Image (cartoon, rainbow, N blue to C red; front, side):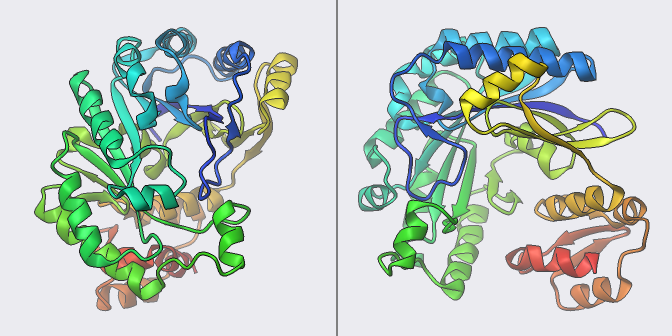
Length: 377
């Protein structure tokens, strides 16, 4: 497998959104220098264990890493470069909230080459319902300010919100494509366990669209995006051009290697013999303690067997327009793909075949997880 990137998780947010199930903690103004130092030391520890390997992408995610000043961003970029070496054209992505727009220029100067902005909706009532602290005007200003830095710009929107209709979503998408961005991530709202939204749903206080309504919203998404020149290269991600695609996220979908640095971060690292699934301690204090004691912040590192590697390759690869090499999948799994399942899925118009490569059709993407399970059966 080729390709290598680094994911750095910054776990603090000014406010925790009610739909979020990521490893996040409310930022209360405490000193974050110890965590920054632990992250830098973790990068050095990973390099010591696995050796230097040039990274083509560095993704600063969270949480809300856009809370960090330019000097802190520069510190993280330099630490990654010192530990591993960043490619000359390394994609350095910063997940950002619109409220941090005043920092965008200095963050770009610090090494960020791509902003991924959590706009989430272009409707003020929906933003309030999602627990966001910005309005539509602020979201638009943030996208424009990021574009003004000369860096690549992506932004997120959430659909299938409570009461969300197809006509409203179409108008929202059309407005989104008037903004100066070349990439959009369009996510269906999922009610995750142990979130505020899950508790509201359990009490009957939140009713998102049902499966049929969500499918109609997804199909409308594809129609509008295709017409606007933003085809889907992954189930939830759309880019105007190939260079605008998220280089870092493609590592995940292609089952390449990435380091998971920071509290709660997950990674996949190959050493030429084994492929390890790593997970860092979730709580910042525990993470920093592990780095100080062991050189890395791992809670666990598990060697994946061939079947597990193959299943990840299938599940992630089917999400993309590139699809999956079924011969490679069978080789890793040490048993052939179910030919009857392949033939039936193709006959149903859910799977398209090009030699050994299988891709989901537009209809098939609505059933991606079920199709992956069928192929692996």
